[in-house]
Image (cartoon, rainbow, N blue to C red; front, side, top):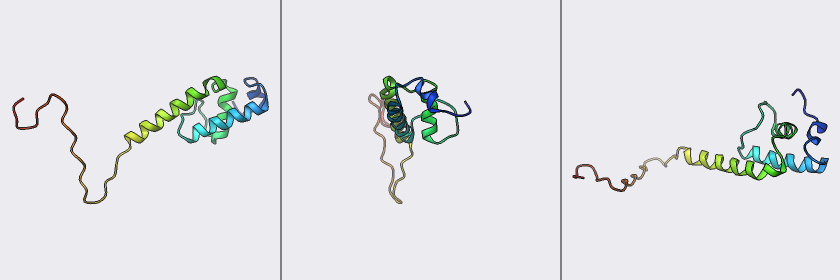
Length: 106
């Protein structure tokens, strides 16, 4: 798709007001880390309009897309390495249930 137009988007939403509302909600999701549903190297607003024009973003799946973005962001946060202040050691991980500490019989 060379250019995305309002007319392309209006095939999937009722009017321009709904288009603006849907696009801004999707831009917020993209800025929070949601994965784009179309491949392009554009700013978030253009990506959102391309997704709407492609029929991939609608009011009925907007909440689901938001939930996926939040889950992805939570996973990134959990996977991020934690930097400790200088001189502070990492806490020891607790032993798994049913395992004996090293050097003791099981």
